[in-house]
Image 1 (tube, rainbow, N blue to C red):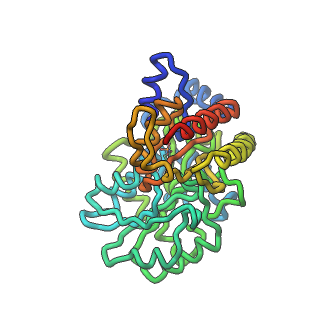
Image 2 (image 1 turned 60 degrees about the horizontal axis):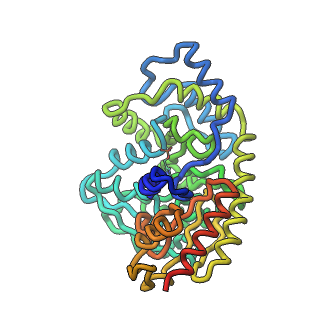
Length: 380
Ligand code: PMP
């Protein structure tokens, strides 16, 4: 959708993009300064495969101070983004035929990474009624002797749902009964949480050694292009990731790593400012979505996405008589008719929804939602 949107924009059409998954803010100045200094100080050579020790120490301190979690730097592997970390973990853990349980909707790459590792995704479906969260009973029912990994994000992309401490604890009780299952906890949206403090499933000692925290700098510090992420895991898993990465990409960019140290050492002021803007826009989009007949939404608790239900438009026709049969048709219609780029829910494992990112200006959000409302009203 982003690509199609860009093509329309190249033809001179004013397209508003609500399809991208990155903050519309600049990287904070103190982080940019650290990168400039890194260049001047000649941090330009190969880096240690798991990352500079100073960055891994900054990550250890962050996990201790912000999350109350104790890790040693030997348990941290820095990568070229949370995406590479997820891929490393899947490739190191999954053998052909192993099952990976993934609640839907999920971030698009999860299932494709499992395919690349020749594993099998087992989906647990959720919907807007359950606030897109699974129950312990659903988890228990999905587990088989072949289950190797459970993989989820909280706050979630694409739904914005956030698991509470109690909900995570209830899931941890299920994992206690199944000691061979690893848990990949994607916490990349940790700081964009509107309800409470972030809770990690790694906090429960009984399963702690099997939890792999995946996190990074892309969302919290508006550093998507810098490519900087990491895992925190048991020493064995960390060592396996180090080995995998050593034969593929090696250590990530020296300059990005020096900037990452400044990001973690510089505190959360910039993140909190960004969060304030997201909180305001979340309310704005929530009110505007609720004003569109046929669209059903919840109020997401984190990240910067809405995942509204749009299946009431299936079976309707556009002005040229083309039928809207699925979320892909609707997203395409909204792009071509309303000039707003969104993402079809099918890409995230649930076809009854579309995803809207509100990492856009208030002005653009108001105009985009006006266009969406107008375009949907024309379907008959
Ligand atoms: N996990 C989720 C849930 C994401 O939304 C994204 C980015 N869209 C990533 C991981 C990847 O982040 P990174 O830029 O650090 O690779």
